[in-house]
Image (cartoon, rainbow, N blue to C red; front, side, top):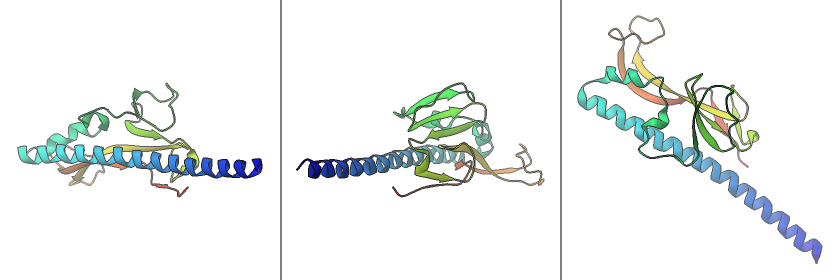
Length: 159
């Protein structure tokens, strides 16, 4: 009887762990969706004003500042190595100008580079590089938008 109860408890704990991992991914994706909506609203505002060039001012900023409300698991801005980051938390890395997410479990996502257990994003200015120098030049290059993009490709793994 005790063995049966232990098997049941083990199965329940495994199910709860899978639910917890799915919950983390859903919260992560929900935050990205909120950020994308905020960025799209900002771009639309600049389009309406006829000031797409003005989007260049946002390219190195913290995307979390664009949200209208606080994110419950956003810890703030830190310099590289200055803070221990809690699992399942967002923070802005001032050194690299990146918004990063610290995974609860490093094995829950596969990434193409960067720090293990972390997924990072940058606000990237979308523009036509008219002088082909691979950087934005005000007055030369044509701005078409702004987007939050992963620094390295990543993929959540099925639990």
